[in-house]
Length: 315
Image (tube, rainbow, N blue to C red):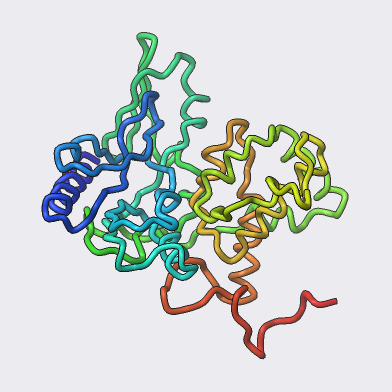
């Protein structure tokens, strides 16, 4: 990944020196292993802070909505698809963005890695398809494919869909991937089993809203859970209020979610948020042939009407 980082630094420095952008939105090393954090670079002298590796899972499209500056942004496949959505939804203009495209080979799941290492993790290194972790005088080498995020394992859009410049050669897209196996398992359950499944899924939720804050689609000026006149949802950990938050937030993402995994990555109690959004992604694809963020020229199915739209859902 060092080649990626070097190219990103070179592009970012050139853009800032030539005053083609006001800032670069990218990643820098975090204070903890496997926790790279977003950063805003405005001075060419600071581009050496930029990094790229398999710990850059946060969706940077979350940081461009309603900005007025000319922005250079580092974007992997899912980030670029969310940028497309933002442009379509008038949250940013295409001419404001200089997109540095990153062909992605998947992000690692820090929870999977921590589960396989008994010591406190002090360092994490990456070389090809191997991840080396060390701490407490011990070290271990893992195969990246075994510790990749679940959304990355089924991703078929690893290359950015729009970009102004690439930081590396395009990668081969994954083929013959069953993206909806888990969704079909839930669909096959009885109503009672589904109820139990979602009860157990949401039981650990502490209503911290980290999923909402990490999601690039959650840009409403006031979220429905924060409204007080009228108050739509209670503020407590009452199970009904918790379910209401998660289901309504998921429906707000219908036809818009790119399965970037930012919500699940941010969740402090590791709730599989994708159980909601992946079902809606599947429905949008099967009903309308729609995948979010692939084209600037096509409106999403839920904000358009066609006389031949399927009406099977109308009872």
